[in-house]
Length: 105
Image 1 (cartoon, rainbow, N blue to C red):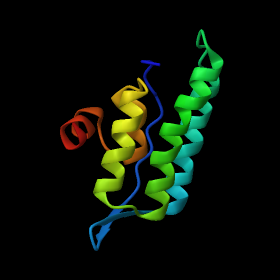
Image 2: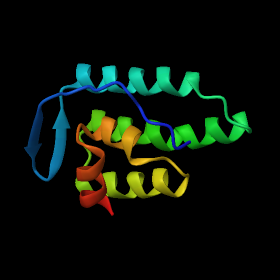
Image 3: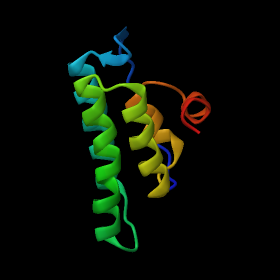
Image 4: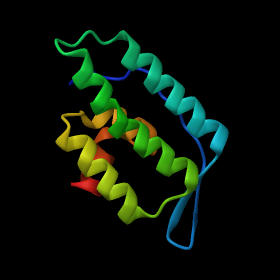
């Protein structure tokens, strides 16, 4: 699960009432890029990938709903605990892996 996502999706950020609001079309594009990347992985245990991918999907869903930083922090922690690298997480957060790590470690 430590593979790197090569796609980069950028979208505007607006902060409202402690929620991070993203352009929903751009978030959907990021989610689609992550789904496409997930489909290229060939893990030893496909069921583990599927259940672990839900952690990444949850981050995307929170970004679509404009969740607050605390909710995102919980989702990021779950994705990291499932073994996901900072690259796919950062892609969904529209930041660099280093910035995501600094913000959510």
